[in-house]
Structure formats: structure tokens, C-alpha cells
Image 1 (cartoon, rainbow, N blue to C red):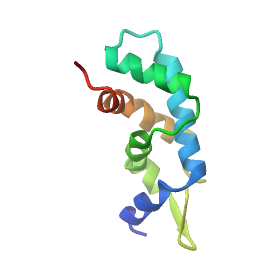
Image 2: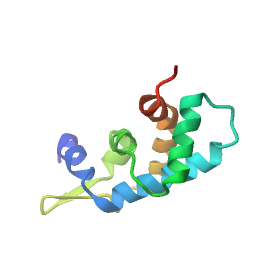
Image 3: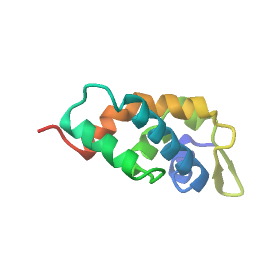
Length: 108
């Protein structure tokens, strides 16, 4: 199955989006005490103040991770991420946290 098709469809899968949101919240809480830029701090505040609200840019970043998309399956035209380990989603979130934060809240 085409990774492009998987990528296009997985973003509409509510379970996948919720798992990404949960991983984003976990990472935000983990790094809340770190020295961060003003924009990164704003992103952490946004994420922790709106728990489990999806961040579309993070969903896209995670969906394009090779380990994640490699485990997505398409059945009956629907994307399913049940075989994507939580650890792979968390890793992708961790790797993209500051990139997404800087995009949403650009450095001054």
C-alpha cells in the first residue's frame, strides 16, 4: 500500500489523532521545567492548558515518521494505526516537539 495513501488517510483516524495528542501532552509535561524559548513555552502552555486537543502540525509530523507510517494499514479504504506502537508515536512527538512549537509560536 502506498505510504502517500496511508499518510492522507491516517490524519482522519480519530484514534491516531488522540494518541498523538496524548503523546504531545506527555512530552509537554516532561519538558515543562526545561529552559525554553518564549514561543516554546507558549506551546507548552497551550498543550497543557488544552489537554488532548490535537495539534494538526504534530499529527502531520508524526504521520510522516517512517516507523509510524510503516505500521499503518489500510482496510476497506480506512486507515488503521492499531499496529503502531505507542513508543513510536511518542518518539516521533519527542523528535518534532520544538519544530512544531516554533512553527506555531515563531521565535521573535
